[in-house]
Amino acid sequence: MSLPIYLIGARGCGKTTVGQALALALGYDFCDTDHYLQQARQQTVADIVAIEGWAGFRAREAESLKAVTAASKVIATGGGMVLAEENRLYMREHGRVIYLNANALVLAARLEAYPLADQRPTLTGRPVAEEMVEVLAARDALYQLAAHHIIDAMQTPDAVVNQIVSSLSLARAS
Image 1 (cartoon, rainbow, N blue to C red):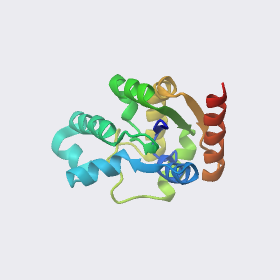
Image 2: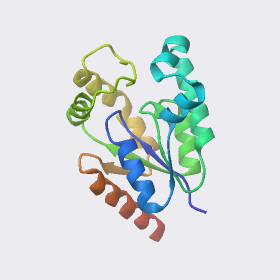
Image 3: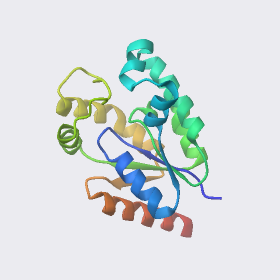
Image 4: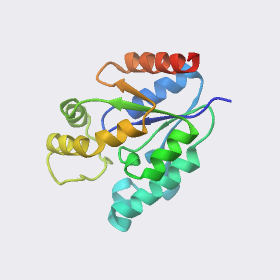
């Protein structure tokens, strides 16, 4: 039985895009915890935050993580999934955790190039480039702490998938 693969990283690092391609390459199922949560609640992330606050959203996010975890599944997590130690430990204990690492300027450029109407509400109230610098400063150590593998996500999605597959193969061989 193959362990689930959790993709972690900041908004815009490619968790969903890479996750779908990785699942296809491995013959795994794919799930995005944010999409799962929104479907289960019939609300957008922004709506959940507006009604329950960030703490309520984070609690629902943790529930979603556990609900979608299954063997042979690639799981794209929300960028803040690592904020709760419980989530970091859960992912490390139940699967392989891949940190898709990209710098703040790349993340901001991606988010600005593909603005989504249902994108999460701002965490800081600042422009996206400033927010990404602040978010990475606060979360990078948590991403690294949670990760079994750190992957350079500033490459093409195909290159990122190839790097992940290689990292997982090397880990199995050792």
